[in-house]
Image 1: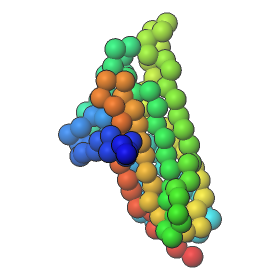
Image 2 (image 1 turned 180 degrees about the vertical axis):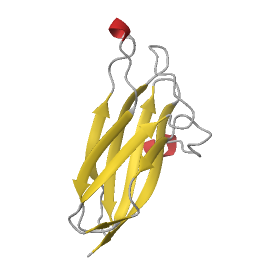
Image 3 (image 1 turned 60 degrees about the vertical axis):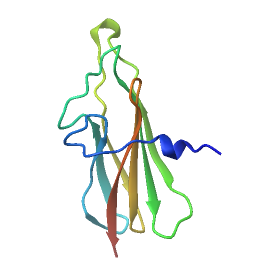
Amino acid sequence: MKSIGNLYQSGDWKGEKHVPVIHVPETVKKDELVDLRVVVGEEISHPNTLEHHILWIKVYFHPEGAKFPIEVGTYNFTAHGEGSVYNEPDVRLKFKAEKSGTIHATSYCNIHGLWENTAELKVED
């Protein structure tokens, strides 16, 4: 059986413009709002033109000990030059967590496919 997981690419975001960069505090208090930002093309700008663009970013949180991750947000980018308007794949969101876990960010480039990155979040009592 083929798995979509094998199609995700990753790398060092400082040298690869497609990797979602996750900005999150290393530690938060239980039930404190987690201020999270995900950017594609932070160090090396992504073109974001009609011909070459990021279509979406998805963010998941996988609490320690949980069987499945929780989808925290999906962000679609639909302006790729229509009327001279261009999206930049840069999203910010807030959520609360009761347990430590892993943040997964995924993105999709219309030419270069699926990309992923992770960051750990420690939740203290």
